[in-house]
Length: 308
Image (cartoon, rainbow, N blue to C red; front, side, top):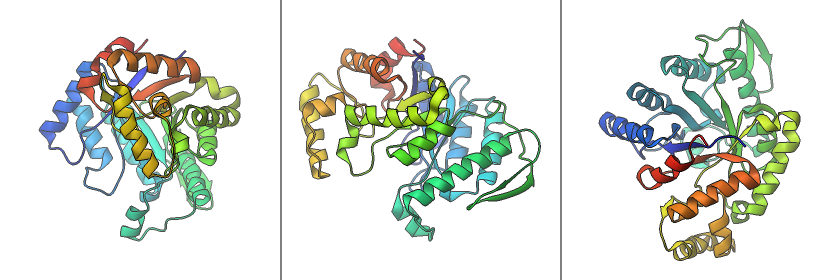
């Protein structure tokens, strides 16, 4: 069993430097392993400057993208940003990268929102370019989406051969890519598909990853995050779960209270119950990386399990 690692999200929106650094130091003091930020053209800071600020304000806390939208930047340019962040943080960067999913952002800036197979193929090429830039010496790459000729990326990251790369998703195509190329696999539900939140769907996704990874499966870290709603520490877990059932029903899915409480993407319950749930996810599926979005409420869970 891999030891547990716990992630938390940076403060929502556009916090000022004082609010951000205070939140980062609280997370570090509580024993969280990393603070992460998604990548959206919404009312939030850009990932790299925010994560650089977090790294400068902390000593141990790792920083990560969760996840970068590959369609917003050329991967060779992105590689320079990320390697610089890894160097400046003393080797504390984690790179989450994905194929993009939020169509309104694409439409707003005139970027074509290609079909899933095209976006995943572009993601695969981008990962190859990132690894080439992080590697020693110049490299060339000729793909359908990117062409690189005798380019050597600078600076080189501190972590060798590169910072951990996470690829996540809920579909077979993306998880197959993750199994082949990632160090960390993010298990996510498919948008608009409530069934993909269930334990059965999770087992299916891990099967796809295992098939693609082959002998390297044992080296992969598996991650889940509370995509089914914010973490809720409560003694009335069933009551809170019934409200989530109603949300899923509004999306066209019929999940039971048990489905919701068991879901690897929903964290509702008392501290002891959630601690037991997280232990169970590792025992059943090998999931050892968990994002929890309420530092204060979940600190006792992290204190009990982090690094064990």
